[in-house]
Amino acid sequence: MKRSIIWGFVGFFVLVILFVVSAVVWIYPRLSAVDSPNIRAARLALNHTALSRVTDVKWFTGGALSQTVYGVDAQGRPLDVFVYGNATIPVYAHSLITPKRAVQALFVLGIHPLTVLTDALGYCRVSPYQQQTNAIYFVSAKTPAGRYVFAYVNAYSGSLLWHETATVDHPYLD
Image (cartoon, rainbow, N blue to C red; front, side, top):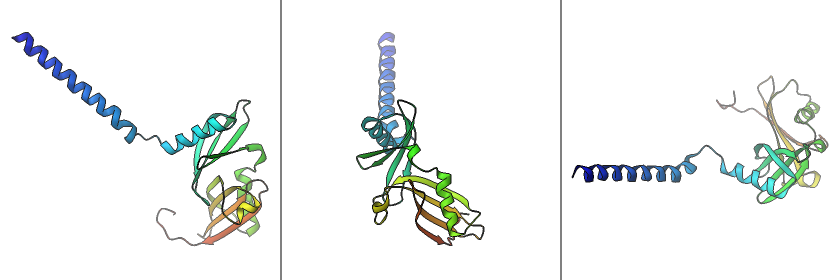
């Protein structure tokens, strides 16, 4: 009698453990901090380009929502891959200007010094920029006077494509 009670408790305990493990295995991917769109973009870039190792994935919202996957190819050369939907557009980093040079394109406006907030590289399919280039930098900066500057810069030539200045009263931007 004691033996059947002990095996009953052990069996119940094993069932509870199996249920908990199953629940964790089912719930964890849905609660994980891993950003699945970034993983999807990285896989597309790895599977459809010469990219062999991913170092970073960043979102680009200038024009249309897309990701830029940064990495290196098999020879160790830096390669940037624009993932736009299911399309991948690889561009070797040496053919693009640096983010610092993209910020310097704003100096033609006569506004300096600037406090750079973002300098995001991305792929743009919005008129009129797609006629000039598809690889652009979106640069946002703050002037000493408290105004914000938003600009698109051609990622190949460094020319200023579009800019706007604005005063934004928002607690998160100060």
